[in-house]
Image 1 (tube, rainbow, N blue to C red):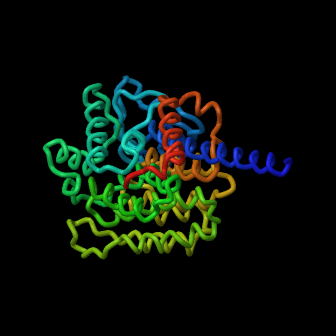
Image 2 (cartoon, rainbow, N blue to C red):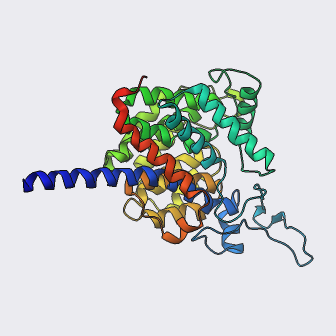
Image 3 (cartoon, helix red, strand yellow):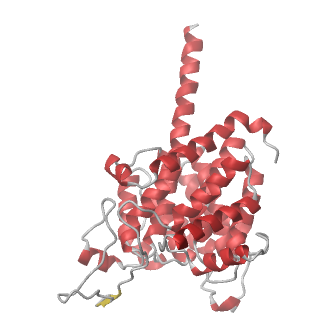
Length: 365
């Protein structure tokens, strides 16, 4: 009898622990997003000069001269102010589109491209109605406008630069793959959801990689296996590109992930000097994965360090926070969580994703 009670207690603990990791996956995305949001596009040196170090959610940073004029450039380059109408604890397009994907899955019980397209349009239009700029990239905006004009989500994708849009929002598919056990189905749709906005093969590969990464972390993959699997998975989905491809060819994602694998122990500065942290997926995604494995056992420090390297730091923060939550659960500082806008919405949709486990045998996919 005691053995059975202990067995049941263990199962309940495992269930609650995994449920927490689902919540932390989405909350981590939003927290990393809101940490980087105030200085999106800034260089590391600019963050140090005007902020010092970002250690918690803060208001969007604006720098004025002694006459009260907004400073748009300093000795390090342009000071970018992308986000209009946002305040401390707000998230950007990274979390908005993650929620769009997650809420579509829980409402339909499956991965439905048409409904996901509707949810993307709804999030985008909501920002326009509120006159809030959340940092939607040009490729994503063009694709959403294609969807709004009636183009099928199978044909709405845009050939632009290698953006990181697919990687930033793909975690709900990784959660779906875990809860249903439909790995191949999930990977197939991760590719289609990526193509709905981005046609650059490197962007597509990053989206599929992120879905796989969430699935792998929920299955407690080791650091060594995580680092080793990155280029292997990427290679399956990244198709070769001609160097003249739309004028954007700057290498392939797989080779950058091989660099991370082979240089996993170098310093953060060395990795950033080589990879960078711009919105180019060849930069932001490998750098985030490098930082995640580098701080495998000290993830909150790693998240702070990643954001403070600047560049597309709302997205590198969102991707890192997502990975961190899937691996570690709700280890984020309480003061961060208290500042986060729409925490209850994020928590609710994560719980509903987890509850798919209770009815997965009824899913009609």
